[in-house]
Image 1 (cartoon, rainbow, N blue to C red):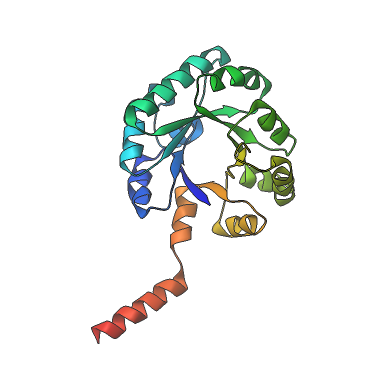
Image 2: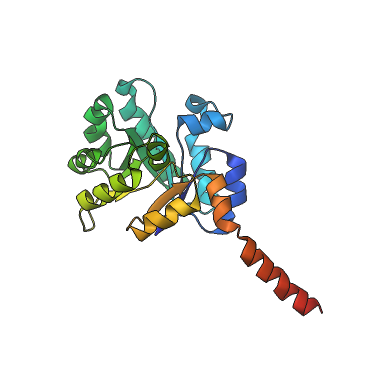
Amino acid sequence: MALYLDTADLNAWDALMPTGLFHGITTNPLLAARAGLDYPAIDWAQIATRARDLGAKELHAQVYGPVESYIDWAGRLYDAGRMAGIETVVKIPLVEPAVRVTGAIRALGGRVLMTACYDPKQMFVANALGADFIAPYFGRMDAAGMDAYGALAQMKAIQGTGEKRCTILVASLRSPEQMVQLAAEGQDTFTISPAVAQALLDDANSAAAYAEFEATVAG
């Protein structure tokens, strides 16, 4: 199982990465805007170094702007990762113009993630492209009234097996309870917001038991 922290908030990185829970960090232009960052102005070498220093093994970031610029931008992100000593993964939206340049991005030698997935059929696209990851937006699908659990089960069936399989990185989660049910159905890779991460760490019963232990020792 692998967990990723889904945010561009550097304060959240500082607070949560030292827990040791997270294999990596994922982000995109929307998350950057919420964190008050200007996405085009981000220094990815600097950001990648910070992620590495906090223990991240991977940093996933999304292409943006004109599709014609995606390949050069991806190359710069891969270079930033190599300079920082961390693997950078390029996130590519599952829309036709972006799909058409995915092969050229993959030819740069780094890994890619197909993002903004809303339908099990898109698993065929990711598999055909040789993508390393696909990120279904589970919470948004569920909020839209879609059968999100059923869709994820279908994606799992299409995924296949073996080392070359496309990893389903479940995104847009709203609670640990959703994670628990999805894990029971075979999902094993999740990217979660700081709020969901904190909810994973907090449990009233565990806190009460801990307080009782400490009170006993204190006499």
